[in-house]
Image (cartoon, rainbow, N blue to C red; front, side, top):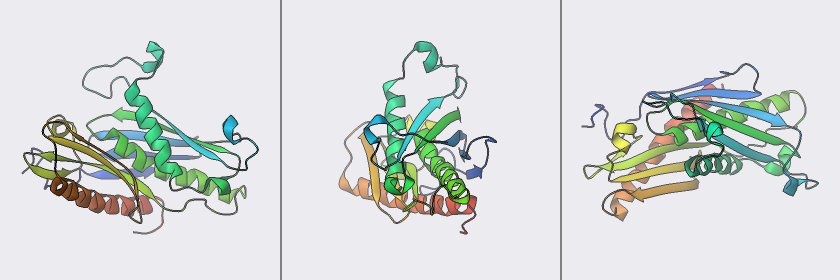
Length: 240
């Protein structure tokens, strides 16, 4: 039994609240237990210089943790004048994940900028951000279709993310901070709704893990992301 009382294959309570930000073209307040992330999507009628005159669009992401999202206050990265390597790595992951399920040619020469702001952190902030960012992106693109800017949604699949780990020799799903800090193995899985693998980040924090444990984590991740996909559809009004 885990310290939280959850079964090995049990996620924390998950809620996806669409339309959480009044002015953004798309938004979603994502909660994985005590991890809360506000995801917004903003449409810009321009693209990076390397895509000018190509007819293709772009999706990029920014990620940040508010000063009191953790137990003690952390300084804003803007005040330090630079982003940490962790922040850069996570926001690139979010952008890659969303681009993997979007037809950028059908998006046209416009950019969707995703902002993921961690309001409260208790492990799994990047996975919550990716899961909520997909909802925000979908809503923003839906608005472009409604306004007849696009003729159809350029989304080819859904995408979500979940963490897994090995604790006490057993694979478990959706680690909170207490579990993440003591896990022998820590992994993040980004998968599409049809089961495609976008990215897997797996690290042995203690002893190396074997293929059996990896297979167990992958199976847990697939089940967890299937459930997240159902919740994304419900948040978007697309049924269960």
